[in-house]
Image 1 (cartoon, protein in one colour):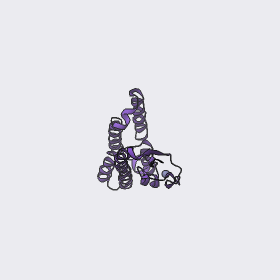
Image 2 (image 1 turned 90 degrees about the vertical axis):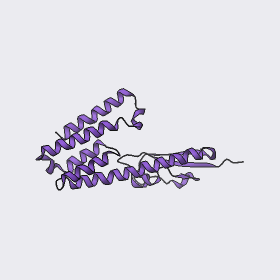
Image 3 (image 1 turned 180 degrees about the vertical axis):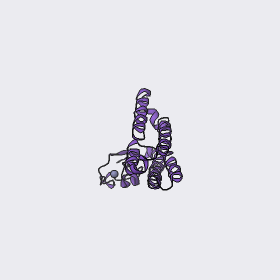
Image 4 (image 1 turned 120 degrees about the vertical axis):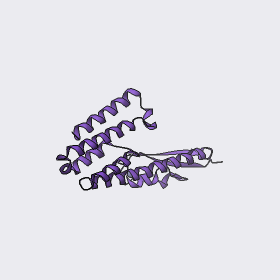
Length: 171
Ligand SMILES: [Zn+2]
């Protein structure tokens, strides 16, 4: 008798993952072909497993769906925060701070600085507030569970590298 196989889609969830991949993240199917290749060429993995392992993968699915939803929330908050900078800085900072509870990516801060260069150029106190917020958030990020898998020295190096970059672009 042929053993029934299942397949689960694992996206690489970060600021670059496309909406299609985020929508599929964690999805379970009987057919490997139901996961067409990503239109934006993101990196993803399809894992096969047996019926016996289904409960484990369903549990994974719940967490993965949550992670994909959180990434969408993060993006929305971050975008709203960027657009309000220069108009309502208190609200902008509050939204940006909320977005960092989900995650923070240095290239996204680089984008913010580029888009709001006019506003930031003449407002040193604002740059200082943003720097403080992002440095704290970036430092916290490396204490999170998923980064604990990195070897200690590598983690410290990555954290320091990110913080130096933040100081550079928000100086
Ligand atoms: Zn994709």
